[in-house]
Image (spheres, rainbow, N blue to C red):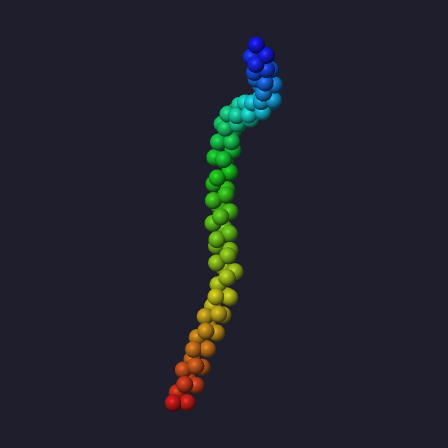
Length: 91
């Protein structure tokens, strides 16, 4: 008898403890379900602009890095030429 009452009492307190968590999860899922169409429309508008920004950033990075790359290539070429000339003089 007391065992059954204790079990019911434990189940009751467990349900009370779980109820707020279940309510938060329910409303979070419900809210995401309601916001999904709005997010889809917003993403359709934003996606082309994000692509434009990505392409512009890529072009700008190539333009900014090109002089440094050319300078490094010329320095490496001069270093290699110097090494070839110095080896010939030694040999």
